[in-house]
Length: 137
Image 1 (spheres, rainbow, N blue to C red):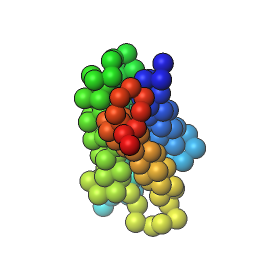
Image 2 (image 1 turned 180 degrees about the vertical axis):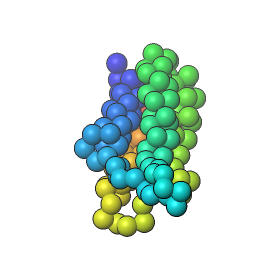
Image 3 (image 1 turned 60 degrees about the horizontal axis):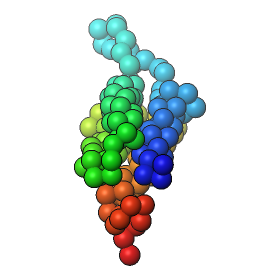
């Protein structure tokens, strides 16, 4: 049971990211007016869509990890660590968020950064720990 603690905490962090993006700290809901007269979503909305897909993949990976033995789980942590790095990059650099700091997507970005750090640190601890359920000395 203790072997599943870290993936379970990572799964909880991933679900919190999804909750932040869609429930309590959602991105901007406004639309941009184009010169053609049409409207489109702001770039933070597209960042949320991409990060949601990463979270869905991460939920599946973590659910599978909870069924694996320790050595196989440690190998899959590299995918989790990659996702923990990619999600803040999507919002921060790849697609981005709104320029105005008073826009709601900045709160979403803070949630993603904080929880991604937690998920990444837990993943690194899982990879680096010595024997069963022990961190290295």
